[in-house]
Length: 607
Ligand code: F6R
Image 1 (cartoon, rainbow, N blue to C red):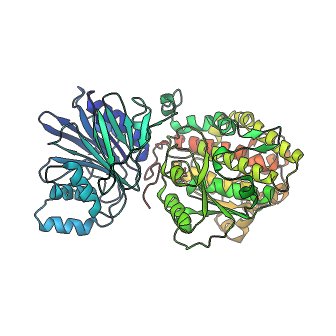
Image 2 (cartoon, rainbow, N blue to C red):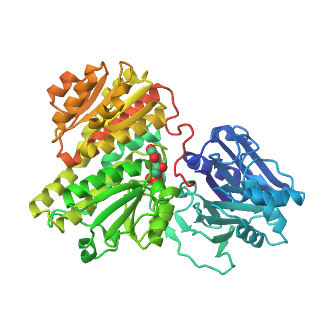
Image 3 (cartoon, helix red, strand yellow):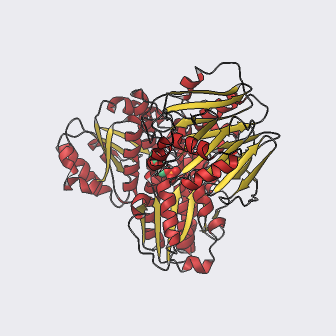
């Protein structure tokens, strides 16, 4: 949510900032801007629209040796050129980019207005620039420190002052900020993507930290100016992972990557000799794992859907009561923490505000909280008591795909581990390991249906509403399929348990509202077939995602896509593939901006 990048060194800053913003664009894309320090002062170029629109008004000849850039997802103030970042103070000497929300900005603004400050935008960010101006007495780091002591809310900020050429000052509270350490050059950004082509040496800033950067060094301190020494970490993601390669969109690339990302998530974590799983980062002894009496998975969006699948699995296979909770709701519910309950917070980005704040509330209440994250060094990954990285590689498309199957992979291995400590036999454990090991090649087979799915998507792209229906462990997969379709195609789609439609949603069925059924060959198949017939009887169109060779389903449905047979609990990995492709091709047919759908942004760092 909003991308920030800052650079100081000797390379042309305008180029580095624009390239950084291009790589951050998935975090917000309604407007963008840069401020570059030059001999004659700041040069600020900003406008509403995408990075390509900004690029079209930046001179081709690169300029400047330091600067800051921002790509925006609007919170305060409409999408206008004036509200685009960077923002400046009255003197025009201070320039700032900001990610987050300042809650007390109106009070501060009124005070500053009374003192004669003149504002040019409607944003909360501009208030910080004027506040720093008000407090500045020759030391820019000090002025930023004093300013952040006045503001309430969330922020990741980077500030420049024209009298301190070559210096950038950053501060964070609740919004990520990462330092990139180069050779006689420094970067600061909300995400490693922005700097990965220049350096892999990074320092993760924590809330309450302030950093001053020059090309040859940096100093990190707390809000009381106490110096903080922090480790420099090496990022292991490759530069190529941030490129589309031969694919038209990141989303398609990421859907097709799943055979590898799921395999990567299992690497070294499945043990056939002992028929169990191994997850090094849990930081829990066998005795602690054995004493778990409940598992609660907390997440948002797609990650929540992965949590619902995993909760079903944990209860069925490990025989431990389990549930999934929306982080945004849990946080404000004053939950009761049971003594032997284990909480997982699941987040691709590791920065989602709802999930992060829920995690902090759980920890305050004394809960044991583990993380399942993709982004290494993200705030959630750092603040949990332990956890698992899913290793799916960078997910750039706003719609989450490969993270879902990788989250499942980690949670399935955890289930195997705790199930084997309880009622699961060696034989059953071996079977489970083999079924998981077969998943990458089965996902590969499911992907072969892409062309068929494209045709189906073309045919149904005229629909205005869609129902996604599944049961049992595939019910959350139906929810995820509906989420994918609505977020990138803007077709209204709802997911339900197929059994539930007779309790209300069946009223929506008519010739124009197709229903997409997930029909695996499991215990509930017959029941789902009855639900399909109920829809057909009301002249509803039925698409079925069913198993190769199921001729009965093929006869009832108007259209089918088949997937390879797997054991009951493995179906979510297989059923989700056609749903992701269906959403992708529908959005493509409708001419939508697949990777950057309207109103959305990746990594939702505001509440
Ligand atoms: C859907 C999507 C969102 C995210 C949600 C949680 O395609 O991308 O629903 O799943 O915002 O994000 P993370 O997993 O980063 O916490």
